[in-house]
Amino acid sequence: MSAPTHTRPRPATRGRVDIRLPWWALALPALAFISLLLLILNPSDAHAAAGDPALTQLVERLRELAAG
Image 1 (cartoon, rainbow, N blue to C red):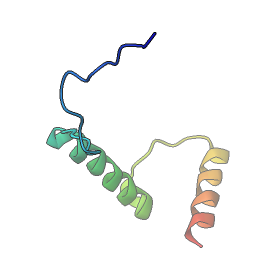
Image 2: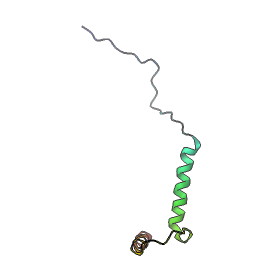
Image 3: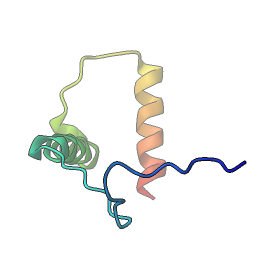
Image 4: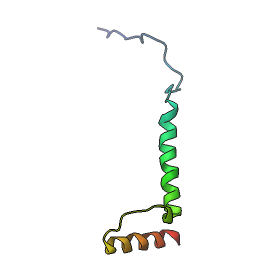
């Protein structure tokens, strides 16, 4: 007894994935990344509210460690 074979309803792709993204799907994350990177590189431009001094010291220490 032989099993029936199933054929594909349309031709198989040749290993190529065809996915199209809208322009903003790449532009918005890139813009967010660049703006956050600029804030990290120049923190004097980021006017944050006065917070807990221990938290401020921790963030400054992490920034110093990341810088070198």
